[in-house]
Length: 175
Ligand SMILES: [Zn+2]
Image 1 (cartoon, helix red, strand yellow):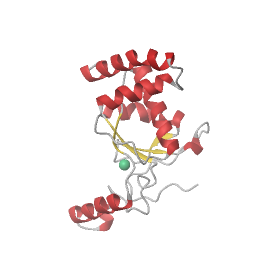
Image 2: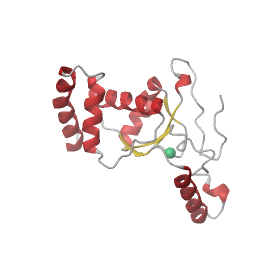
Image 3: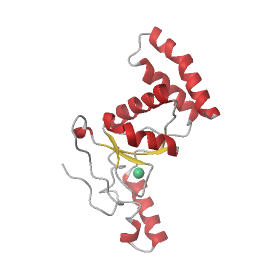
Image 4: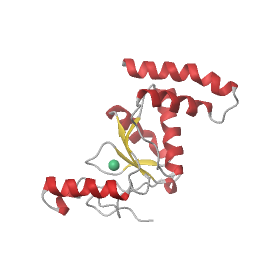
C-alpha cells in the first residue's frame, strides 16, 4: 500500500469517530470524503447531479474502508461552454468531428454536462469501481476510457447494465 493510501486511510480513521460522536449522518462517508479531499485537493465535485454525488461518495467510502483504495475525481460536471471548448480542441487536434467524437462528445450529448459522468483516478481505483460500482449505479461505459464512469441508478438491483461501448462515437444508451 503506497504512502498516500495509507495516509488517507489513517486520516479518515482518525476522523470517523469524531463524525460518529457528533451523530452525523453516514460518518464513514463523511470521514472518507474529508480525507480524500486532502488527498486530491484539486478535485471539483461541484455541479454533479445529487444522485451521482451521493453514489460516488458511498462507492469510494466502500473502496477506502473495505479495500484500502483511494479514488479521486479528475473531471466531473462541465458547463456547456467548457464541454464545447474541449470538443473544439479535440476537433482541431484530431482533424474532424467524427474523429474527435472518439474521445469527446459535444455538449448536447455529454453526460458530463448533465453532471452524471465522472472521470476518476488512479487506475487501480478505476479498476475497483468497474468491479463494484454497479452496487451504486456507477458503470464504466467506454472500452477506450478506463477512467470514465456514468451514474445509471435505474440499473441497481437488476441483472442489466448500460452497454459498454467501444468509444463515445457509438450512440448512448437510451432508457
Ligand atoms: Zn468522461
